[in-house]
Length: 346
Image 1 (cartoon, helix red, strand yellow):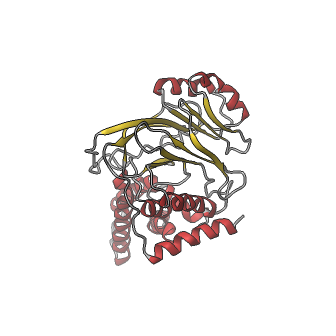
Image 2 (cartoon, rainbow, N blue to C red; image 1 turned 90 degrees about the vertical axis):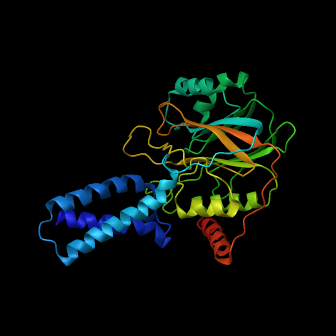
Image 3 (tube, rainbow, N blue to C red; image 1 turned 45 degrees about the vertical axis):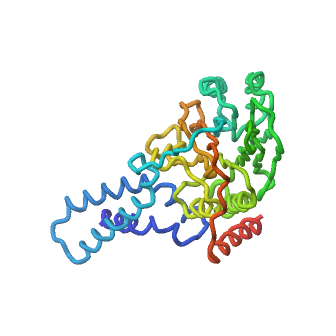
């Protein structure tokens, strides 16, 4: 009986996000697709082993479980290393590298993160959940990174940016929630248009944070709308507190035409760094089609609950900035609805 109940639950629960209910309970199934896939394989094996007298109900359970398993595989397979990867054929016309990581505000392993900065030696360093203590501890890298944007907060949503080059049009915005900052700036590229960066860290839907995903979804949609109005290479990165196969993130990619460099390379699950069996790909980078990512590496564990991600972003030589993809009426309506719901929830 217990096996039957578990099978029924894992047949139904993967479709919870399809209801579009923003409550964390319904969105959690998106986060645990890899883990629930593993459980589904085990449940199927146990059922086939223990079931003796097959009834119509038994066959319905088997067919439904197999169908749901294939549905989940369809969702996550493009982000595995087995999926065919499209490599850029364009030559590089300059590059910028970034190390972006959620350092965990309560983590005091400051030297370990500094070691990662020195190991990768990126052009940009982005930290999330960084407070005054982290700001003081990272002051030693400012000899190499003299241009900074500092937003120290004690609410687990502080953000710091360190750059080797002077940045243009730097702006700290609170797009949806008054205590959740985002950093926007232009990174100058010699002989090319600057690369516009959007660094985000919206709150997740969870029992301990925002009860729903409304604020997170709205911030992503607002950022996407701005990107559609630009005519320059663009990068969006940070701890998005969402998985790449969720409907919201897929809608964001659809409205911007941006590329996820994770496709065909692997999941690069960044959270939770302490538990290998409970990891989700929450930290992302997306880029417009006039850019490509040459190198993409997950950091070592530096005491945080997240791993950091290192990217080398190249500007394609002699490639025009692509035009915006077209959106149908339903897409436009959903985008506006997500934005309004996020604003109304404040």
